[in-house]
Amino acid sequence: MAFDMKKEEDVKEFLENLGIEYRFGCFSEQRPESCHLLGDYLEGVKKDFEKAAKIFRNNCDESSYAKSCHKYANYRFLGRGCKQNMDEAYSYYLKGCTAGDPDSCLNSGLMCVSNTPTTAKRPKDYDKGLELLDKACKGNNAFSCYYISGIFIQGVKDTITKDMRKAFDYSVKACDLGNMYACANLSQMYRKGDGVKKDEGKSEEFKKKALDLQDQVKQQMQLQFQQGTEQY
Image (cartoon, rainbow, N blue to C red; front, side, top):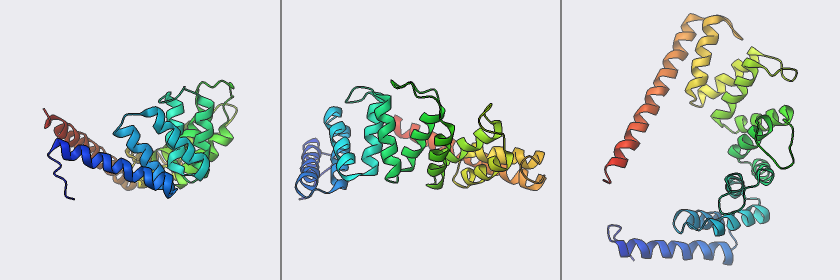
């Protein structure tokens, strides 16, 4: 059946059929990807965050579906569809990370090195945090690579020694992945000869790359703004 997406009744019927399809795939065929899509459907279409949270949690616990672990961790972190619980959020970010989700590795790593409130009052754990952030970086999470580089640029008193060579290596990967701040840092490192041999040509090269990425972000934001105004 062809749907006319300009007609409200057709859109409603299409969405209802989509929900039926996801439920069948999840509950009857027991496909983890369908369960995750059902959770997204309950969240985005039905706005039933409580049911979505349950779907994401079950899909994580029963199938170790990484994206569902990450989604449920977010729900626990924000208190969305369930009571806020930072310790459980951390636990599910770890599950997501173990299952191969770089964003979960990033978030669990950040919880280890930041002042996130927890009922267990866990102290900061930079060793575990760096391990998780490094895993996220290896999974091509640009922000994680940039964040680690920042840790080594500054160091952490009595915990992590400043290491500009490591900062340089992580900045290179973050820049390659499109993080404009990492590219700007590389420009400074090459200009000063900090962590790498001084090279004015390389400094200008990374400065240009940082500015190009900045322009891309501005253009994207402008495009999103223009799309938003079209509906008024």
